[in-house]
Length: 215
Image (tube, rainbow, N blue to C red; front, top):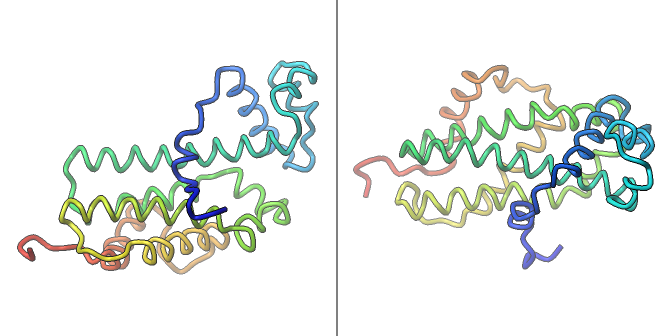
């Protein structure tokens, strides 16, 4: 995809599913968690959401379309959750350090708590691994653009110095994907307190936070 076509605003502007579509996506997600994607049939999804197979196919022309819709909603929900965490920090006029810590914790907890990704990595890695490795550019782009937007806002507020945010944002996005792929790590990320301590000790410094009195 061209860099002129940004994925982040496309994900954010995606229409919220109507009640019937939400029911279908809920049913599909639960079926994927129970059986995996390959073993989940459109018949099973139709049964779970109480629609006829013909009606389901009118909403989603193929199983691939349904999978894409579930993935889009999962991505949008993840971004909405991180947005909500940051908005609470902004509303409290939190320091740059606190916002960075909460952003890192939200990213890690969101990845750690994604049941579908963990289910697929454990049982159907051949389906999900390409989208996190050789075909992972869209995921990296989403993470990079989200983090670059975050850094740019803090720069406008005078809490970070002027620098190109994209290299730092991409480095952190790639690290997050790596942690999702290989959660076994010596990095102490076992609980929220440990995540926040690690962020304060090792992540905050990467953002070159401007301390009070420096400007």
